[in-house]
Image 1 (cartoon, rainbow, N blue to C red):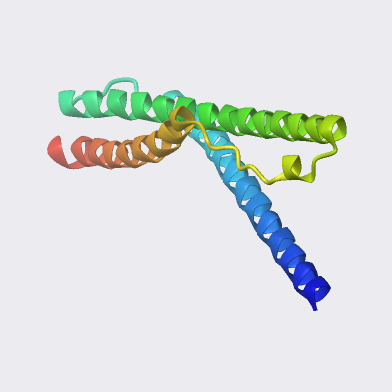
Image 2 (cartoon, one colour; image 1 turned 180 degrees about the vertical axis):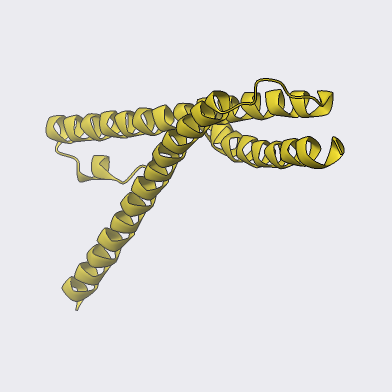
Length: 151
């Protein structure tokens, strides 16, 4: 009976680890895709900018949009680096635990330890979304001021 419970717990634990790995991979993929799209969009905005923007508010909003998109790209790249850094740190913790186990042969040294995400990278994760939302709002206001305020 005990062996049956242990097998179910092990299976449940493996499922939890698999879900966490898929979540981390999806999040990393999201930020990677977001960065790629924003870099392309930034290039398009700059390349297709009109020669002269007649309304001063539109000029300011265009500049704000470019700056916000740039900040979003920068934050997203920092988050991606944070993911790599987190995986490196988790790998180092696992190596230390395995080394301790080989030296002491103590099974308690193999207890699961979760490596915490760095708060700096979590800040940049949230700031990516804030910059993204603000840049979208700024672009909408830019188009509005360009089209409707000049009339």
